[in-house]
Amino acid sequence: MHNTYWYDGPQELGSVIAHQCGAVGLFSSKENPDFIIHVSYSGIVASLLCEQEPRSAMQSDAIVRDRDDSKSPGTEGILDYVDKCMIVKMFCHTTIQHELLETSIQGPSELYPEYVHIWSLSGKDTVDGRKVIGREVLSELRRILGVRTSLWGTLVGVRPTKLTHKLWDSLGDIDRVRQELESTHSISHVKWKLLEQVAVLERPYVAHVQQSPKAISLYSGIPFCETHCTYCSFPYGLIQNYGKVQDFVDVYHRDIEHMKRLVKTHGLEVQSLYMGGGTPTSLEDGDFHHIVHALGTVIPKGREFTVEAGRPDSLNANKVQSIVDAGVTRISLNPQTMQDELLRIIGRGHSVAEFLAMYDYVARHTDCSINMDFIAGLPRQTVKNMEENVQYIEQLRPHNVTIHTLALKKGSPLYGSCFANEIPSEDVVQTMLDETHEALLQLGYIPYYMYRQQYMVGQMENIGYTLPNYESIYNIQMIEERQSILSIGPGSVSKWIGGSDFRQQKQYMPKDVDTYIQDIQRLLEKRTLLSNEHWRDS
Image (cartoon, rainbow, N blue to C red):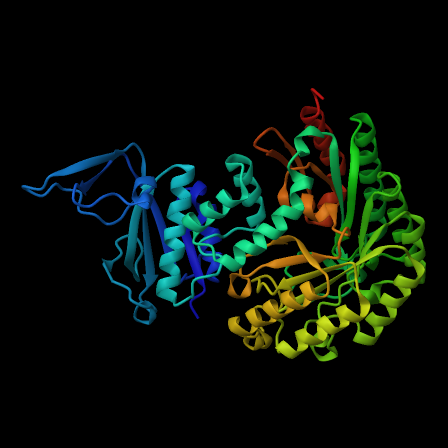
């Protein structure tokens, strides 16, 4: 299994390469990686472009590929000069060179002992140039590893709809966006239709957001769970193992009060608030009650206020009453799948019967809209299992449904375990997603937001579906990154977004809870400073 690489080059291109390598399942590792991608600079590149060989669009944009740069005698040509060029070379370890497909070994590496040079290209050191280099690297990795071309073509990254809206802004017409994505990224018709449907629904939320610079959303993160799901790589600990919960709760209240003052000082309009994690409902009843009520004072009554109660075993009647009293309007109950055997394999602390009982209780005792999360591609999961999940959706009729594709992450317990070998094949997972998508459409659900992750089975996607008029504003704004979202709690990220290009200023809260507690004063002072700068002239 060839699944590691190391990148040796400038940071600007490194982030692009990381996305491409993730798209074929390669993890970054310094320890004897299977592949090394090395980048160097040349001051001036002169490439011979024969008059009989017209330049392709790709060559004119960025690429000069392993070409003899000397002008042959008697050949009429044109020398193309590029001010600054990156030379990209790919090396593979000698132990795997004969296992790769259609690879032309160009010789042993002088830079890296035990590696051979298998491929190279050169391209412009510009934003567009780096994107083209990235697409070429992805195509080459797919070829030599035997990874099929994705229905997304060469389009990688977390937010394909964000790119769609950006192109829509500049091109002014959704059909021209389609033409651009098909020509540049070779995106398939089926993925374009998904992108188009989601983008059209989202458009009213994102097209005129600049006209309301003081409209924001809030995120509140609780960094604890009661059990560790095997597919999860988030760095959150088990709440029962943390000995300073009361210190955390006290500091968290300071964080909330500070946010409340910022909202008042700058006259901000909070459109939505999402309380996530971790598992917020893993808190003890009293602590949960006080925190959710404090959050309820930051957002006007009746606005979208979501609480993620992902594990039904962490929810009880007292917490449900606290949710109601605090003015929560939306709750997320996430079974992930509805088979007891699979729930045990992935480390969930509840049964199907317990989930159904809690769902019924929430539906009867609250007016909240309800979201359910499912994952396609779990170990030992079958197409029939996903069909059963859809049957439960039809029975329960949640307002929102999110269908995730399993992303096998290196930091998760599942990675490297025996169950990793029992993840369904790409074809099976694609069948699960296709059949589920069609079934949800038949049930009246509409895809309203989507995103992708690295290391997903088959380079697929996560899709949020909604019944008409129940879409989550927070999910749309969080994915599209056109509205400022300020955050509370460890591991969260505040994003101040503004300008015609939706530029971002970020503040990362420390993931370590002890560090968060110790540094809270400095963190709040920095949040004040960044907020003052952002809303200085408004």
